[in-house]
Image 1: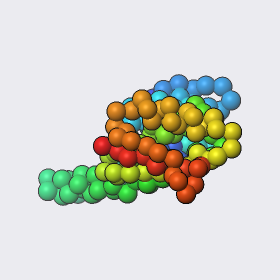
Image 2 (image 1 turned 180 degrees about the horizontal axis):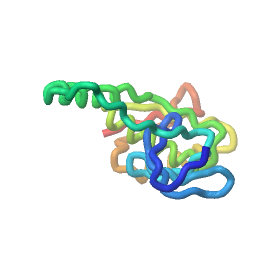
Image 3 (image 1 turned 90 degrees about the vertical axis):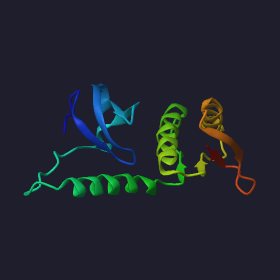
Image 4 (image 1 turned 120 degrees about the vertical axis):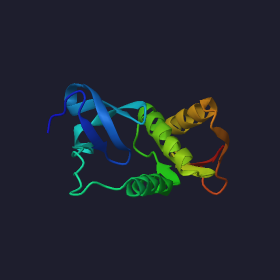
Length: 152
């Protein structure tokens, strides 16, 4: 399926976003939670228009639904596996993951980057140093391929 600028899409593992630009090779620039990222077409699906309720919802029911929606975001993952990604892809994925973790209220998360090569690990550590929401981070003493991140 071809997407155009302005189309609402759901990106696997990241959530809903808006297509900002169609690129070559079946790739798109998609904005998710205010962050731009390049996504392959195979990882996207169109967002369906919300189904309309048959009866008008009462204001209390609408507030309860909004509360449920907020509660669903607390189930964000506490770890992310960045194996097989380039350094640039890892940074973009890390940003989205940390955003979700902060919104979910996680105090500590784990970033799995692997031990060999070190490019993804170096990119992850460089990005973590730039983020004010990161209180501290350290390599897991039991697994050198994992960084443990403490969040504010």
